[in-house]
Amino acid sequence: MKIKDELLLSARHLKVSILYGSISRMLKDLIEKTYEKFEKQVVILIDEYDKPILDSFKTTYQEDVVKMMAEFYQQLKSANDKERFVFITGVTKFAHVSLFSGFNNPTDLTRNKNYATLLGYTEDEFRANFAEHIEDTAKELEMTSDVLLSCMTQYYNGMRFVRGCESIYNPVSVGKLFVNQRFDNYWIATGTPRFLLNMVKDNPFRLHDLTREWVFDENDDKYDLNELDLKSVAFQSGYLSIAEWEKVSLTQWKIR
Image 1 (cartoon, rainbow, N blue to C red):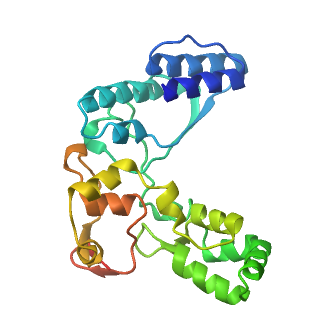
Image 2 (image 1 turned 90 degrees about the vertical axis):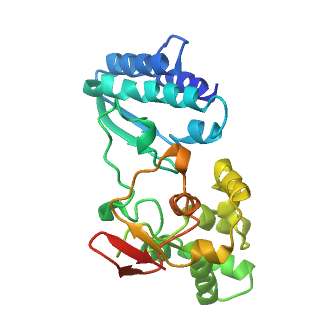
């Protein structure tokens, strides 16, 4: 299992020995042994926390995977006194599957304005840090830097998940452009979860219906694994973004 492999790899990197067993037991052992060796609280970074669940979505073993992952994250609570910082990222939010029920629900930064540009490049950051790449790519594509920037803005700048905040460039797409020196739809090749493609296949829709105005409730941030909405999932995974807002009620906003 890949999770076990990653835990063993981390243990080897930290030069600690852990027992092979369930992923929850291995995580607990890794935290404890690392804490004992360095006599310092540990920092834990977990990417794609929801991948095991998404990969088992609508399978006969879905409930078993949810239970297994809930037990895995329970260890983060058990070892709380040995942890300095825990940062978890993923595509979707599953408050109803109780993944974090045993782990003092972590602070959700998804729509926190203080972190709205954390995982992308703002316009100022982009221009200040990639001037050389911009010039080289423009030369390769036989266009001026201004034309290249205009095209990049159209292709890759537009990710916005918090009302009133600046849009950001997709870092994956920008990096791929500079490496390959050609425009392409890089995000769909690198960031599309399989379950989203299956949802599209199982729920025929017109593109107009997916992208037209829709009402978004700021309090509606819970997603039931068994009742996922295509529009919400597309928004969470970076295929729909906020263009502008129009207030409908105290908590509801119309998104264009």
